[in-house]
Image (cartoon, rainbow, N blue to C red; front, side):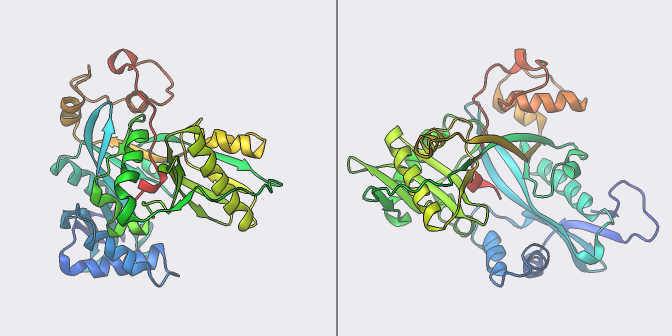
Length: 366
């Protein structure tokens, strides 16, 4: 596909002619170098990370690396991730957008917009039901191009002065070789209560991309001699960030809360933050242990856009119109109604009915 880099069908004076296409296997190393330059220039191990994204992902195919080429030089990159989501009891396919970037020498020329348009066309060609992305640059760029933000809840708890010492005998250092089946079972039990969650097969937990994103949790807790919960968190400058937490009982969540509080104290931090569903029992146990309430908010980094309306209609088996709506307010309300989010109107309530709330685990963000 060749068109001016404005992506709008007209050539801006001085703008280069850009070719948008998928990368050949021989071009993947150049794509890795470009990602290193733009996204993680100070991390020496970044090339190994980006190499694993294509060499160690069993769902990867060459068409998923989209590039912008000017005079034979790769100046822009976008990685499509193959994802399956559970939605209203059905499985839908999503084309995920990640690592959208432009070489510093070519910014401000519409190349990122062209890459996004190219990826959306690719989504249609390979029959993804929807497009999915997580924006680290805010929503306006994607919002202007028809993407709808979906709120995902977050929490923050100040634990200053909580100095109680907890018994660590119930904590378990988890091993993927030994504990994967039990961890997957716990994940499946809790995830089934939400909408739009990632469907993880066995390989998803252990491949290169999963290792770099720390999908498999390092810590579990035991109740009555059995694995009753697991938790995944990161220590940051702001505090401990909880990315995933699944348990079978209040006791399991209390024990995991004690484990996180112990980590906070050992790191001399004062805050526990994370992305969990609002009212999550782990946060309730944290509040009880700390003797204070958490503050709830949300992020809007998750964004969606229709790709194949006909396929989505067929899979969901809902009372939907033949043609996807064109009015932007109606489009946004459709997605929020479909995904069980708060909405501005009841335009779609008769068509879609009740839905479990949307929640997308932080560990699944690509």
